[in-house]
Amino acid sequence: MSGAANIQPTALSVAGRRLEALDVPGDDGRAPLVLLHEGLGSVGLWRGLPELLAAATGRRVIAFSRFGHGRSEPPAAPRTEAFFHQEALEVLPAVLSTLHAERPLLVGHSDGGSIALIAGGVLVIAAASAGIALAASSSSPTGSSSPTGSSVAAAPTHKPLRLTIPSVKASPAARKSPVAVTTSPAARQTTIAPAEPAVDGVWSGTYTCNQGVTGMKMTITGSSDNNLQATVDFYAVSSNPDVPNGSYVMTGDYSSSGGLVLTPDHWIDQPPGYQMVGFSSPGPSGGSMQGTVQYDGCTTFSTSK
Image 1: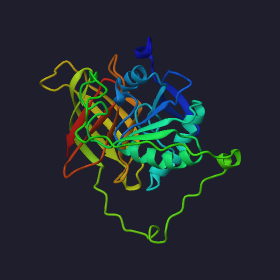
Image 2: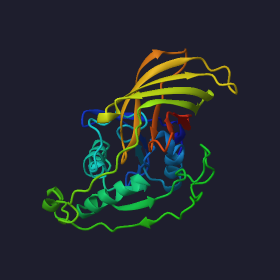
Image 3: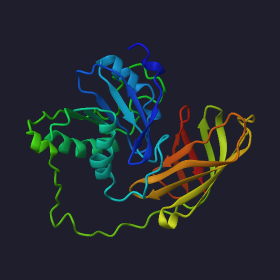
Image 4: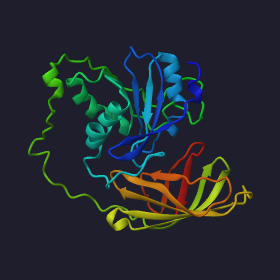
């Protein structure tokens, strides 16, 4: 599709908060593809896949960064065990409504696959979704660590599971009726969650962005109530001596189920030409913590206490 490569993410307003989205145009007569990213993903980490899918299928392709990911604002409140259901039944329908995306094909990767299943089970009943595709793999969505994978068909380690659920005819009244989700008494029994690893403290290591490998010291405070603040100091390392010193403040939250999500807040010391980046991670493992740098052109970070 001509011009698809030049399409840039835009900002939506969902529930009064900014949400990053990418909307690649396609045939309005066909169901759009809606990409739901994995636990550490974002619009930027789909890399060129949305444009490749649009070119290969002729369909409109939509991707968005969930709250706390990419360039979206942090969630309004700390995540709970109902996170997947809130994303599937509240945030996703609001995004689809804002973008006027009717009866989409939901394409979920890892956590996005769980959200797609929950949403699809409701949207299909309401004749508002055309189907679901799942890819539950720890590899990148294109099956390659390269930012420009040469083929959409590059296979992840595990063969993707694809489910197509035919739409169900529903009367206008049925489409307007709320769908009740119930659980059995056994499912509602309270369980005691294991203690979460401490994420507060000083973490030192490196991260990689356009300027190359960069040294970092990240000081995190406030993890007792999942309302975090972090100060990031970055600097040159011996293998990349031209990086200037800089520092900025981030805010975010952490839980064992949702992981660590830190979003840039404000600069303390900004070198010319530099932008703040966010960080996300499953959380600490022993005395180390690794994750994803949330900014175009950036990859991962690795730290230890």
